[in-house]
Length: 422
Ligand code: UD1
Image (cartoon, rainbow, N blue to C red):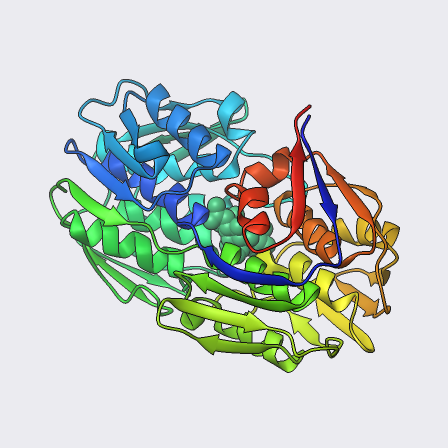
């Protein structure tokens, strides 16, 4: 298993390109199932999760061509030959469940493995199922699979989600585009990935309005056609790399990022004393010389609030703050697994339920640490950039699910980081 070795303490400078969003791309790829014509996605990130979704779509009969080193994905779903998303794939990646809505809309049938729990919490799919049932799907859960049928097709409905879910909004939106009549999604997720998916579906001939607000209206159409769509920039990768100069010092320009993608996060970074400027091509972040970060109170919330996917990385910065910070995790119940690893590097963190109290220390020290999930693993790398001495992060396969060429991107801005293949 690969490891990443970081020698900390070097200020960073230069430019870093932000990739296309993993989570947007993982929802856009299943949208290809909705039409016989090809869907071409540009600005796709080169990540193992994208390869897993490729394998899943191929298992359903789609043809997926990864062009320009995987940057462009051409997906053809002329014929769907299977409607079964197997446990072997779904257990590796929860986003697999996003084929459910499109399969049902296109073929009237789907069999998708239940994803089960994952490291960061229980993460049920009840809201996905509730929404599809409201569209007229007949659902049956047996032998670990969701068996879904819509023998008479799907029909539009008013669906109010009791809590905001990104995945459920995406799944139900994709099913509703081909339903008869109008669907209204209330308390819909407002994430940029939802806006991106709606834009792509509209380019394919769907009639969706209101994406990005709490209420999305979808007028069903009889069929969709092919399209070419550029995947939105990855706001979580952007926020992660904005933290690199904040924690290690220096100034870095993030090319392709925009403040609107990370507004709540950027406000917090500025409150911590960092300087964020909008540039012609993106955003530049710098840390005033000699200043320690100021402590913060951070609460994770659905977009436009502070993203849960940046909580672990922000914690890495706050371990070095000049005082005590509080991080409240309100989205997932078990998302502080990075805390004991950060403690191995000298951080002082107390956790009670969903609240972490971080008492800033003057310096972190390098240590061998273990990645436990995607965002946790990158928080350890950020901490390693600031720590004295050497940090060795093992189990980096978690990282490869969501961060493209992390060591190349960080060494490009002056970090001493390398991958040891194993
Ligand atoms: C997506 C993102 C993930 C991010 C999360 C929250 C993808 C592939 N993943 O995950 O990176 O951390 O949004 O921004 O886009 N819930 C239910 N029932 C459901 C669905 C969700 O109770 O049917 C709960 C979850 O347990 C969680 C909350 O709703 O507490 C939010 O989950 P959701 O927005 O669905 O997250 P994902 O779509 O899984």
